[in-house]
Length: 453
Ligand code: U2F
Image (cartoon, rainbow, N blue to C red; front, side):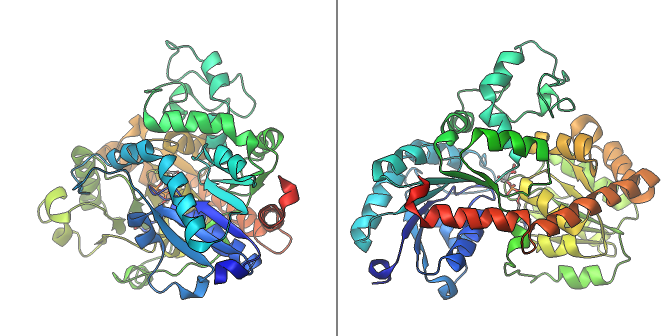
């Protein structure tokens, strides 16, 4: 019934891995508030929908989740031992047909055609589906504008970087990239397996996004402005509408008492550690990190996604219980806003960087895949509020040096000042008349009016 009465029916195609679906849903919630007469159908896998949509989400009953096939073979089980990229490869074999089938079923079930298609920017095929439906296509990029630019310009990078060029060769042939090196570019741009499923997807995305009525990104205009301007010249509309964590207050769960624990610590003293939602570092790196934490005096809060009994040295949690806290999941955004946190040890995921900026916390990086090396280098060499580990991995010496640098030196203080400046700019972007708010209004116009096609 609601579908029949709705002024617009907007189909949303989400990407079910990493932290993609949650920021997309957070933007959809804001769009729904701005356009309350529209109905939004949010298509993703059952597994992703069940964690993205909190139980009893009646508050937003104009956003309905629909499940698409995840492409997994019968009986496939998710477990820590498996390669975390395996379900992604299966899923990418099922697209775009699973989405096409689901959109068809959705229209049949609701009796309501689609008026606009919003997709994760990964889904280059959104362009064709939208053309077939004769509706505008809006793409949301959930990582940094600079990573997007690297995929948009993959052909250009491949022309300028030879297969035998050294990994530390600077990309000084491109404005704004002189401090970035060949090794920092996302996987599959100039190195790695070009035929792997994600590089193929991102390369096609780079070629297709100019067809989108708008490309929205979870960032703000003042962060990496030169790159933002280059993207604006490539797309019909390139709209930074973030940081999404500052745009809406999402509910948080502190069942492990992290915030109370932080209350008991000195300002700027705590090391917060999290490697995001996909990765657990390899055993020898975990061991190096646990040794540093045992031997040093830093209080630490570690969101550890592995098996504490099996993956941490025996007795580690007990021996460090007076100065450390281990939890399986933490209210990260709130933690980074807490005055006790002095540094964030991270894998360099984009959401983590935005949340660290919003909390004014300098970072130490151990990047793993995708955009994480590029993010690390950008924060370290261009924005100056974080450090990549010497040698790139978690070793005792590299961790100790980086933590001491940030927590106990004058240069570390300067990093905190620099991230503080970004924090102010981020907050400014989301204030009334701020750039992200204005861009958001344009986005609302695109999804509610047909003439934007
Ligand atoms: C993929 O990122 P990840 O999900 O691995 O990492 P982030 O982008 O940093 O996002 C992690 C989110 O999970 C939250 C945290 C972030 O919003 O606040 N979180 C939490 O609430 N509690 C915890 O204990 C731990 C994390 C990919 F791997 C990256 O390379 C991309 O940059 C990213 C965006 O496309 O997606």
